[in-house]
Each structure stands twice: as structure tokens, then as C-alpha cells.
Amino acid sequence: MKRVNNMEQRVIKFKVWDSELKIWITNLGMKKNNVLCDGNEKRFHVCEFAGVYDKHGNEVYEKFLCLLFTDTPTEIIFKDGAFGYMSSDGYFVSFAQNRWFEFINSKSDSIEIIGNIYENPELISK
Image (cartoon, rainbow, N blue to C red; front, side, top):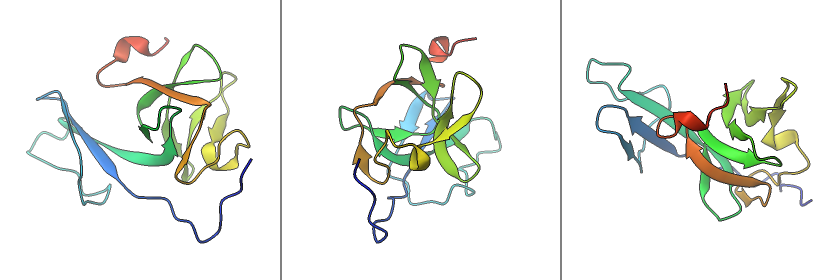
């Protein structure tokens, strides 16, 4: 696997899910803590770009549901200062520390986006 050049930096981008209008708001120049607000804090959900692309070249954001090595949908999360996912045995796996992913701004044949937790909650295994 290719190692990331120390000079390379991850692109910082956000998408916001509007749970009232059921749409994604994109191309925002904002910080994650500056959540859009209309008095209803549960309306807007900010998702950050995880710094990787799926096998089709689509940007992977936190709260997206992906297939990673199995047919079981896995939620992309931000934990302990990194993006990754929870393994089937309950351990957090960081994209940055997993040899199967070429992390910063790379395309991975190991990731396929199949939905997100807002539009496709039925995909989340209970």
C-alpha cells in the first residue's frame, strides 16, 4: 500500500442532512461546531468528509453506511480523533491506521457506499 506523504493534507468538507426537508445541504464553508440552527437542534445533522473515496470515486462522509469486506452495512464514524468504523468484534478501526486503506484523499476498492443513517435506517443491523 502507498504511504501518505507528510505534506499531503486531508480536504475538510461537510454535508448537512436537513431532517425536515429530507435533503443534503452541501458546499458549506463552516466548522463542524457551527451547526446551522433554526431553533430546532434536531433538524440539522453535520457530517464531515472522512478523507477517503469509495471504489466508485464517491466521497465517504461520517454517518454513511458502507460495505467493508463483508455484506454487512457498516456506519462510518469519527472516534478518538479519527475516521473509521466499529469492527464486528467491537473494536474501533481507524482508516488512518488500517493497511487496507490508503488514507488521505485516496480511493479504496475496500469501501462501497450503500446509503446513510438518515435516508436508509433500515440498512443498520440491529
